[in-house]
Length: 129
Length: 183
Image 1 (cartoon, rainbow over the protein chains, first blue to last red):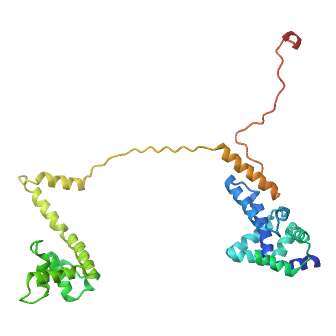
Image 2 (cartoon, rainbow over the protein chains, first blue to last red; image 1 turned 30 degrees about the vertical axis):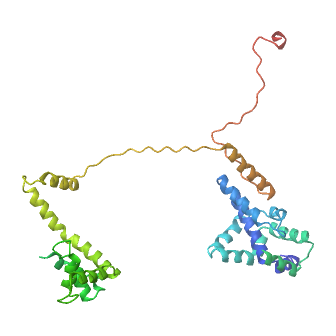
Image 3 (tube, rainbow over the protein chains, first blue to last red; image 1 turned 135 degrees about the vertical axis):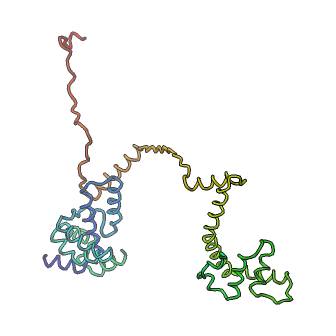
C-alpha cells in the first residue's frame, strides 16, 4: 500500500469502503449459477449502491472478490450484518491488496469529483449516505 | 357418590369466596333447571330466611355476571362432564342389556360409531397449470443483460439443456440434376 493510497483510505468515509466491498461480493455471487430472478435481485442491488460519488461507472470498475477475500467476508458475516460492514470498512486495505480494483475505483471516484483526498468533502458525502 | 363431591377445587374455583364457591357448586345440584339460580343462592347462604325468591334471583343474577364466577362455572362444568363419563357409559350399558328398550337400536349406533367409525376415502385431484410468460421472461433476461453490461458483470454462460448446435448446411443438389436442368 503506497503512501498515496494510505492517505486515500485514511480520509475515505467507511460507508464508501464497505459499499465497494459489497459490490465485489455481489459480483462474486453473480459469477455462480442462480435463478434469473435472484440474478436480477443481485444486479438491482448493485444499482442501488451507486450514488453521486460511487457512480455506476465506479461500481462497474470493481472486480469480483477473490476466494481469499470471500473467506474474510464469511468470517466477518459471522459477526452479524452491521458489524460485518464495519469489518469490511476497517479491513478495506486488506481487501484492496487482494483486489486492486477497489482502490482503482475509489481513485476514479475521487478524480471524477475533482477532489484529492478532500476529507471535508468525503465526510459530507458519508453523511449523505 | 355425588358427582360434585368428586370434583377437586380448581384454580378458578379457588379464586372465589367460600360463599361464591358454594353457589357455583349448588348450581350443579339444583333439582331442576327452572329456579336453579334461586335454589343455588339460597343453598349458598345468600339472603336470609325472609328473603323472597325474587330477591334471591336478583342476587344470583349479580353472581352470574361476575367473570370470576363465570370462569369457575366453566371449570366445574368441564370437570363435571369428565366425571359424568362413567355414569353415561353405565347408562348406555344398561340400555344395551335390555333389547326391549326403545333406544336399544340408537344406543347400538352410538357405540358402533365410536368403536368402528365409518371411514370414507376421498380422492382429490389437484391440477395446477403453470403458464410461462415468454414475454416476461424475455424482459427479465433483457434487464439482467442491461444491468450486467452497466456494472461490467461477467455472467456465466447459459446452460443448454439437451441441445445441439445447429449449423446451417448448404442445400443438397439433387442427384443427376444440374442447376441448368432444373431451369
